View 1 (tube, rainbow, N blue to C red):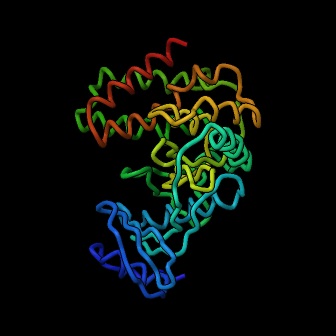
View 2: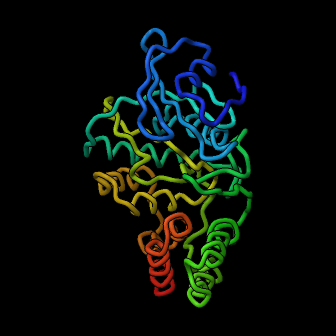
Length: 292
């Protein structure tokens, strides 16, 4: 695999040619950071520019780690350098209840493969990784409540307070949740192999009738976190996804009461990135968690 660094403004077609060693016959920009590129012979690949140096390395390691589980469909990583990532293109189709149920079973299988520790990064992945556009540190820990508070919730809470998005008096509410996490977290579970940023936009419904996962923030975590992310912004046929998951690996009693607890981190990330509206959602989730 070629890993030669390139300018941030390099054309995606030039990136694909440089990293794959194959001529390019066409390209189609999809956004400021993503393009479809046609390689010689007709193969279509996705070329993505990372938000920061190292982001592509983190994503590539996460995709490979998830694919190694042999559970959920994951695009093949063709090549990457510190800034750019070239992956398989996934032809998409409509979602279906049948595909959703299978996705639920496959997601349970992915989680069950496990991870060395909570916060464990994928092999070859950096500790300083990313969730979307935001930094995310993968620091291993043995105890989920303590790890979740120290390395997921509190760093973004402090950033939101520093930015003026959350007032210090409001932050005390989230801090109380962190203090009570050992009693709120439910039964202890082993570290699961998480996608880590499993909102609806990162689930592709393939033309092959299966769900594919893209753009991971992969790490070892609690399996309820991925399911809480699916709830956060909605997911087609979510009830069937959950039925399939429960059929394969039943969740602990009371897991629905803990959805807001697991949504605290992504909501605080969004509060830092996008403002007060998400801060209010995070505070509502904290109140709900304390009321259980």
